[in-house]
Length: 224
Image 1 (tube, rainbow, N blue to C red):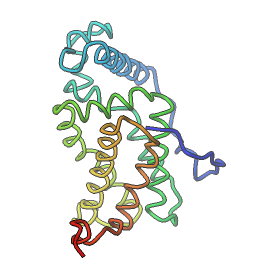
Image 2: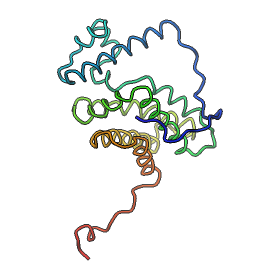
Image 3: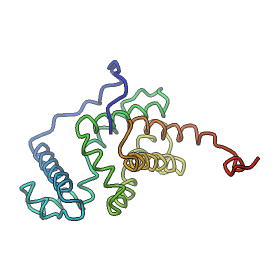
Image 4: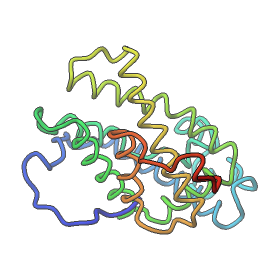
């Protein structure tokens, strides 16, 4: 994920929703999750994904294997999860009620990219690369889309009054999640070159306006 392509003047609508400070218990949990993830990323970079075991991760993070599984059901979850989903959902809900829906989504997606590439740029690249190279990670990406899609459905329902379980809302949410996954895979397949935010904007354009104009089939085949 990457930083925003242009600086913006902060307005009340741009500021994150107010969050109560975490208590000691929540801070300890966050510290443990971060230690497990950091250990995993380091080991994967050192020896590869398949060679990295839960026991090695636990040892490097100075926790027990059962603690690792308590926080992350699978090794793939360690790679793919972060702390941003709820924050970004709050950001989406805090956008002005009269703002066009796609503008709100673009704002939040840019925020997500900025958070990832500013705080953990190498982790963002590693995640994207593993999604291409490791079938188990890619499969888990697909599975996790349902949970993320439900969050989007809830946000759509809050904004529009539509039924979050309605077909149209479900199709929209999963189209968005699938598109964002393809952005990540495309970026990794092309060596993580270029601005990820530009690729995200192209994906959002497809969702908003449909496919760009192509060439007639006969022209592609070199026929008149």
